[in-house]
Image (cartoon, rainbow, N blue to C red):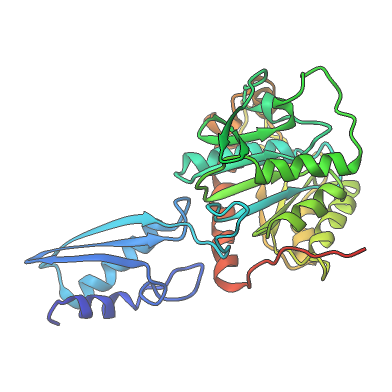
Length: 364
């Protein structure tokens, strides 16, 4: 077969994206084709820099190219990425591609720890990431990022004061903990907490982000309604532990997003504290709180199961010292990196297959 741009695209149309189940050409993922004699180069534009299947896709491309054109050509395949979105350039957060809510039915299940390490893992994989600590009464993000005592600056843009978020570990951060003394209790009624969240969304200079994570307080409250009424949310992640009590509460959080008047896609369930592994025996798993509770919850409501996070002493230590566990070699780094890759894939699948999320309009 004679090589040309047209024939090259025809050949590559036999390679499918494993997640989206469509070929790379139809998806517009083949770009910048260059043919100079026996040297051929092109870009494969993945849906996320966190794609764990990039080598599989690259090898599949090489396989069909060699089938059609033999080994007389030098193939330079550049694996790049462009995070997908279904959000319009709305007045609120116009440069943010995906807004992901982290929810749990009850406190103490490690929702904030999970959101912190996921944010850092996504940033480490090359994504542009922001994180809002929406737990107004119990902000933990400043401690977990080792930025306690720091305060965001403010600048004037036209007639409006705009807050500049704190950046740490490649993640842009906003929390009520930056605005109040660490030892002071924040005693606010629902409307005040909701107003703070709206300000974190609309009055902060987030700039261009691939993913903005919102770490919600436990339960289902005014904060949750404020979020879905303020911005269209790409999807929600439910964090739970395996035991029955936690699962019962997590079910309420999951079903809240599935209510017809809310209708936010659930990207999946994360099972935290799934098992205990001693540092010196990383292959041993002790299921202290039961087994596969999160997986069964995901199966029951037909949503993806995103993965298990173990109980390891270093995760607790990381939260206290402000050095994320995902940076520490071993099973914690592997678990959080795999979680980041899985979440990024689920966002891409959701954006390709589901309708845009609409801002919720609730009348009382």
